[in-house]
Length: 411
Image (cartoon, rainbow, N blue to C red; front, side, top):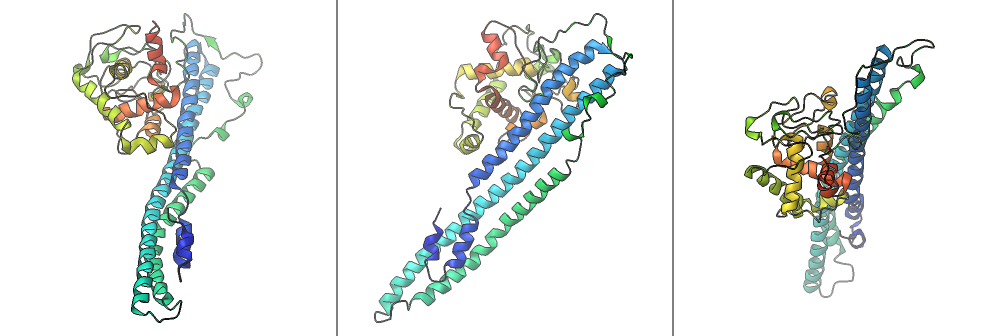
């Protein structure tokens, strides 16, 4: 970044210096703010996903009008959380646009300033050589002309930045005034809801023979971004994720998706390991890790506060751990879509190899890798979600449980 003070000292340099000052903000700071908003949106979905897991158990355990009204009431938390996530993600995208335009304008304007400084120095040298007897300052008029031309060239560079700022301001103000859907402020007080029966009335009837087989709450909702998935799947993949609450819920390659015989590996129990992956799956995993570790993505990961130094595309343990997650979540089917669990009911079915739901995929995907059913893109988002939430692959609840002698736990 060139100091505008040096340009301001030139005769007529004030106009260009003022333009430089308008783009002096560091784009990285804006991107960091955008990522905080984006992560906050993903976290909101995560927490309401955990609530949804518990409500699903209540729904199975109780019947009656009041119980049904309770489930309807609690389903609104998912809608509110999704709305908040969508709003924050949209606003984060607008801030990213500002940062991108600012970075471009800053670079171009600095280039103009550099050329002006060089041209001014050359002008002084030539002028003094051609006019050895001229009075001091006689060369200033020529520099003023150069500075005016530079300012005229730089001024239009501000328009894309100003347009992006205006769009972001409009979007942010609109999101605050009108969320476009159900929000947390729309909730009635619990006592005013119909699931609270009047004195002396019933409405909650215990489901005969109900047993909670979910194996816990799945670690708080949205696992690899998948959603709140219910019972252990298996589906076409024969890789039921055991437990099954928490996102992804071990959907297997079935889980209501269109299974593909080409991805049916030998069945294993939810407590077992995983068979050897097909060569193409290993290739997808390696490619995903290479992209994550590429120099081009270093800045993005730094802005998100992610430390992935322990990841290695050639580390057999990293590859095996990721494959184990894939095996239990989708059975290795990149087209797997879970159409039966609570996420699907809420309009955000878990998808792809690592069974991510769209809001979490969007929050943790990388630039240029935004296709949720693309196997490499899906692995990237699932791995980065795991690092964002658990710190590393070893702390993934399914991996941690398996490596401690237990069964797979969905994330």
